[in-house]
Image (cartoon, rainbow, N blue to C red):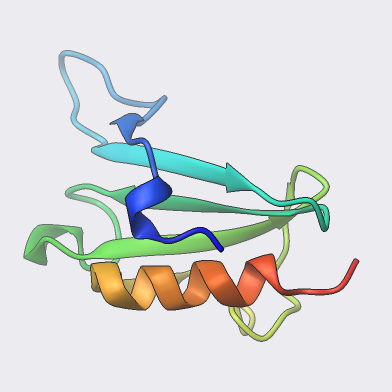
Length: 93
């Protein structure tokens, strides 16, 4: 099972020297789902040092699942991110 410690953060692709979009990490699972975890000044909770998680299926953002519940999930601690990663990793194909 993957956890927060498996995330390898890089500068967010929209970051530039003029505008900070924070950091991003992605994990892809064998079930066709993946997660994107971000933290930055414009993410839900980023200003408080917390993370935002989005669920993807087959490379497309996917809101219709128990983790996303219709949106991205924000204001997450490292532990909460780990719990959600495990939940997505256990989704059936």
